[in-house]
Length: 561
Image (cartoon, rainbow, N blue to C red; front, side, top):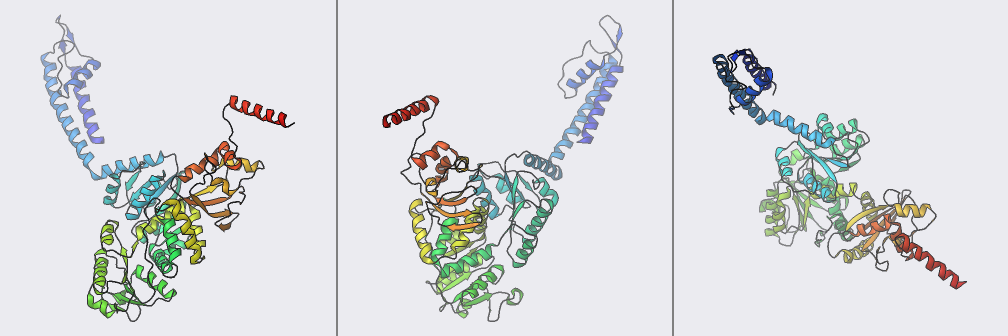
């Protein structure tokens, strides 16, 4: 921009200066010279070829000659300046610098808490959508231009600042608001473990107090992330392998986990529990290693099919192949197997494995690894019994950590319960939500989150857990929710008693129908609603009504006397 502006200023200066020096003649024949103001005015409308006439008197031959020179000078100057500016606007470096400045400014202007999402792949897109639907602001940074273009066309309820850059660079993380006072959590969910590791390390160095959630798909990366105290590490392969083995020995417990971690309002499909017996594992990469390790832990025998046994470190007895050929599956003993895991890192191969296995043994239980979110319909059409969708696993875990941290603690405690306990709890939750996934929320007995209860208890009053589950407009009608976990001074209580008196600082995890938390909030923040659900007494509003109520109370007391 500097050179075109200098050219225009020079051309205008020469044109105006020459016009001031050119001699002229007024109507009386006296010599005169145009002043700077009129010269600037004349050149201003002459340069863009508007044409307005000679001022303040008709020009002399010398002035007209200089006007011709000025016209050509200014027109050429404007053509050069406009052409240079258009070229500059189309220059990739300029457009990137402009986008970077605009992104940094939009992040700096944020005044409400936001989540910094590094990576806008399948997991990032689902996470941003889920957080935006819950009214949470996000900032996105990703090095893939296609991912950023996908974000640009998304219709999200909240505006999301975004920038196409390497999130592993400290400069870009600073621009994205890693030190912003409103940044509450950084989430590193790119497709590369190395990039996620670099993001987590940079974040801990630049802002040690910031909560960091990082995705890792290998054991080495998980150990590296844990070495510098990354707050939460999510490995979708490990998580799925754990849930798969849990479904083998505790179907009810797995069903309860699925119920509480599925997107609220989503229709829950009944999952057939996997059978125990001999399994075939196709693919011994990062995913296959975790599955095989968990199968060994619960005593499930496996036969491994791997195209590169030496490179993957497959154990002895591994069959070389992909599993897409019938001869390979027969060699692995598919007729004696009860289940097969299509765990390759390519969806086409996994679908081919599934179709070949079903042709050879229609009754075999099929677990399929879905690598790309857009292949969802293909896996549904293949009628896979259990699908491993890493993006959904990652997003479920992150949402439970940032929105309802007690959910993760409840699920850890629920793992130690028996099948009867899990079945009974699921049968209590299902009628409340009508066959869809329930919503979960946390109630904190603090002055900030529940001021009415906090003030009541601090003043010596008592509020039992049952009061929170009463409808704020009809206390005889219970709200469609269940208290799953009570936390007090670090002590966790599963399915707390409804008559438990609440104390300051308590936290309670609830699950129930959507929007139930909004009804419950009335009792948390409104003293009149709290008084109604605890005592049944409706406090009148307004000075006149309160005076009449007090008079009626006084009259009743006199009558008793």
